[in-house]
Image 1 (cartoon, helix red, strand yellow):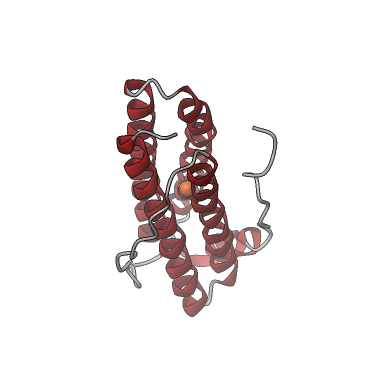
Image 2 (cartoon, helix red, strand yellow):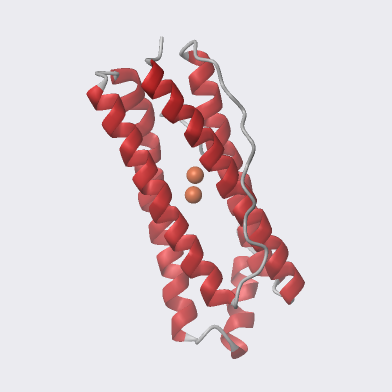
Length: 171
Ligand SMILES: [Fe+2]
Ligand SMILES: [Fe+2]
C-alpha cells in the first residue's frame, strides 16, 4: 500500500505527464500550421510518449492499491515566437519534469518505499535521454538560426521519427 504523501505526489505526476502530452500536442499543431510537418510529427510522437508516461504512473498507482485521481489539466500555450522558442520551452519543461521526478524519488527514499524507488528509476533514466535529445535539436536549430534551407532539411529528418512504446519494455 502506498503512503499518503507518495500517493498524492504520484497522482500529481500523472497530471504533469498529461499536461506534457498536451503541451507537445499543442506544439505539433503549431508546427503543422507553420508548414513544418516534420517538426509537427516529432512533437506528435513526443505527445504519444508522454501519454505512455502518464499511463505508466496510472498503472503503477493501481498496482500498489492506490486510488488514482484524474484531475483537470491547465491550459497550455498555443503559440510561440518560432522554432527555436518552442525547443527552448521544451527543454525548460523537461528540466522541470526532471525536478519533479527527483522530488518523487526524494519522497520514496524518505518514506522508505523501495518499490517506488525502483519504479522511478526508469523515469530518472528517461529524463536524461529527454533532455539530451532536446538539447541536441536546440543546438542544431541555433546553428542554422532557426531558418532557411537548414530548417527544411531538419524538417525532413524530423519526419522520420516513429512512436515506440518504451514503457512496456523490460524494466
Ligand atoms: Fe514524461
Ligand atoms: Fe518528457
